[in-house]
Image (tube, rainbow, N blue to C red; front, side, top):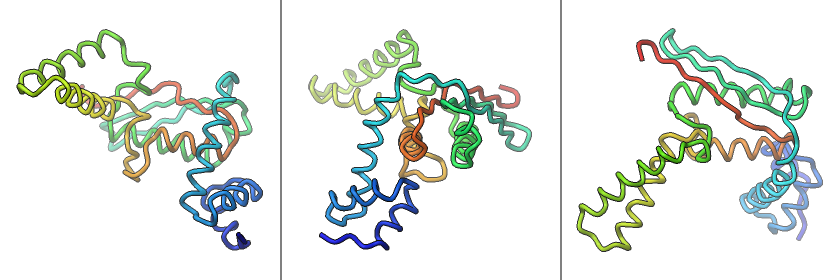
Length: 196
């Protein structure tokens, strides 16, 4: 299969990845751009797994104030000061602050939810499902579905981005890590709302 320079350039513009990596993904996907993007994401995840042990010493703290009524501080860490000054990184951090102001998550990830709070939520959902009188297998699926909705509500990485509902914050983070080539961590945030 012949991949044209135009196809490579278009996908490179969309992903920001090196030309040879883009070309390789397009060849593997037999010219299908969407499939090539999936391949590039998988490669990014495997690279991300290798970066997990690396230390994040640099980064940014971004603030965002909305109409003087909602304020957000978010800390996003990366391995080097060079990346912390990168325009893509800065834009990502700003968008995260904007999203937190609008969506009001409580935690960065599922792992941050205290076990007692999660157990309490599971028990409430289980009791609700049992009260419907449905068979146990169906009740378990109901609980699972509602638990996923709970994660969407409270976990930043699970939430669809407010400016693009087709992309979750976690996917945006993975894409940025793939593009930049360093470990990036949304480490913490605080959201203030006037009078609350």
